[in-house]
Every structure is written in structure tokens, then in C-alpha cells.
Image (cartoon, rainbow over all chains, first blue to last red; front, top):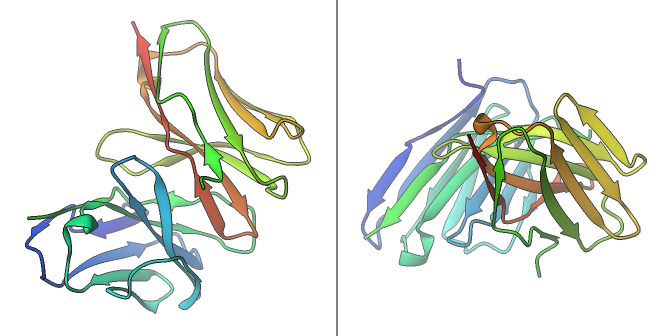
Length: 113
Length: 111
């Protein structure tokens, strides 16, 4: 019973395609996040949702659109994939409004051909 | 403009000795600091944290030190074990939901 699970683990696709990554958490947390780990290994926040509402939206291309159908899910849809989108994407959750650590999924390695 | 910097990309330590991982941050308003550990093909897992009202927090073999005047954070692992070999990320939490991460330090503990 994984706390934060994201699918798929690996995603290989061609430039121009549209793809989605799903994330689910069973910790009862109210805040979920998407991070991108780039080639330099920095973990950069992309989006954060609290109770299904967008609270952080960093400088990310419009091609990236998060969707939170409920508190336990935060999916990431990417349109018109580009080579620079190749990275590992991590989903995380935490109990917001408190100093609480995040729990991470195992990541989705996205490779654009 | 990285808010959190880990200037040592890697560290190698003999089993049983102390491992010291360092982290610097830029904003004196940051008030909560965390260390995460990451194994290959897994997500980061929370290790230990410290609030800005403290300068030390200890949990078993792991101790985090905070030097606010220097804007410096360190993680001490004593004694180091081969299973500690992983990438360690320093992070800060700002405004309850904004996390900034460093680029990580790869620790190798040699048997």
C-alpha cells in the first residue's frame, strides 16, 4: 500500500505527442505537488494544489496542465511534448498549513525521442 | 538563482566514521529546513527536519545543525553505514507550502 503512487514509471514518446502522468496519495493529505528533476538534478516545483485548488504555479509552459479531480489525485497532462521536457517528474503530498515534510512518489522518467 | 545550494556533489566516507553534508541557503526568512534521502529509482524520503527556533535536532544517528547567521545547515551521520549510501537533498519550506531543494550530495559509505 504505497503512500504516493504515480504512473507510469517510465514514459518514452515522440516529440509533439500529448501524454499524462497520474498521481494518487492515500495519506489523507490536503496538498499535492509536481516537481521536475532536471539534468542537473535540481528538484524544481512546478505546481501545488491544496484541496483541489491551485496554490503554486511556477514558471512552467502552458503545455503543462495539472488536474486535481479530488484531494487524493493530482494528474499532469503535457501537450506537444518537446525534447527539453525529458526529465524525471515527481509527485508529492503533504499536510499543508503546517510545517510537515512531503512524501514523494517514485518518479516518472519521461524520455522524448 | 538557487535558493538552496549544496556545493559538494559527492562525498565518500569510511564505514563507522562521521559523514557531514552541508547546505547553504539565501533567504533569512526561511524558517523550516529538511533533509531527504534518495535511493536510485525511488522518490526522496524524509529524514530529519529543524525549525529556525532551534540550532540542533537529533534523531538516532542523524543530527541536523542550523547556523542562522551563516545561513548554513548541515547533516551529521554517526556512525556511517553502507546502507546510508544515497543522494541527500537539503530543502527549505517557506510559507507552509513552498519547498526549495538543493541539487543533492551523493554519499558513498565504503565498507
